[in-house]
Image 1 (cartoon, rainbow, N blue to C red):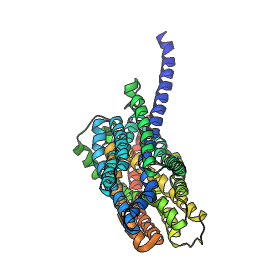
Image 2 (tube, rainbow, N blue to C red):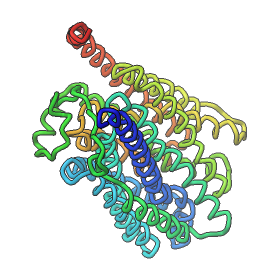
Image 3 (cartoon, rainbow, N blue to C red):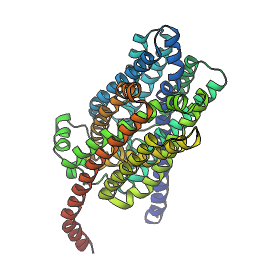
Image 4 (cartoon, rainbow, N blue to C red):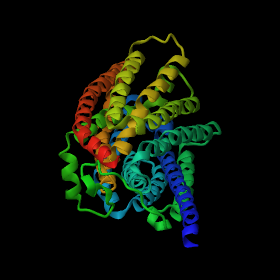
Length: 454
């Protein structure tokens, strides 16, 4: 009787495991999408905040530089948090740091509009970005324990929709609030309230590992820089994680490519509504809505990238990074050189296409590629380092871009960004060569394993 019932028990267990894994991915994706309510809010509210600063006695250019400085300080805090948070994620657990990030973002978002000075705005935004920095690292750590290596690309692509469609939906939601005459302060309070609800849902239902629900934890593969040890999720000293990662040429190249990609992405996240208002002449509400096209088209790109990720392998993913930067640079140059003759549609469409070419490849780096190099053992640390180096580039999206805008205008800024894309493409091309060499080096071993299995 036991022998007869065993297949049915296994079937029920498999079905339950898949259901629990799907619930986990949905909770993480929905929760991280909520982070963007308390991140995109500054970009959406930026024109109104600058108006308040001008009304308080600042010049328009000074207000723009002040907002750029706030963005840069926040991005610096975000980068620092990435470097520190990776180790926390691998030692404290992904679920815990994911929830800490949500709770901290709610508190900092409420604090921002309660202050009436630049000092308070700076402090609240720095605190917000610092605590939010650990959220994605927690997500990657949890995914590394719930999903096997052969589903890594698709799973992380779906999770990446959280910061794309989540960003898009958040911007549309806040744009609708502005259309209904909400002040920017009310927009901040509404964003914090929604994220708090998502925090409660994740607190009640999110689990760290399949082991917590009576399921089996899948293998994470042995292809990381830690070899077979990379499949273990037990806490490890930070030094034992950093050494193998930072001595890997491929990993360092990914960090360099992340620098360029993040600078480009953060520039569009921070300045797109302002560009649509100042250069194209859209209303603030319409600019907030249209700015959602950048992450929306990026989300479509992520779905395509996720479909390809598990089919093309590591070298193929590196090739897609290279192609995205080359094509994105061409579109950026078009934005900086073409005279649109008053058209509002053409520049908006080009911004959306930039999102399509850049965001899909970008989603690989701190997700699937971080798991490739870090495995279960160092997933959060690898993701934190990749994102941390990336956001060192993202710092330039604030005050540095503001200075370029004041000195060279929007055309000059887009031409500069095109150069950034193409210089980053050179690093991506070297990464392709490194991954192809690794693949050729591993082929004899793979063939031997296949022969033995046969």
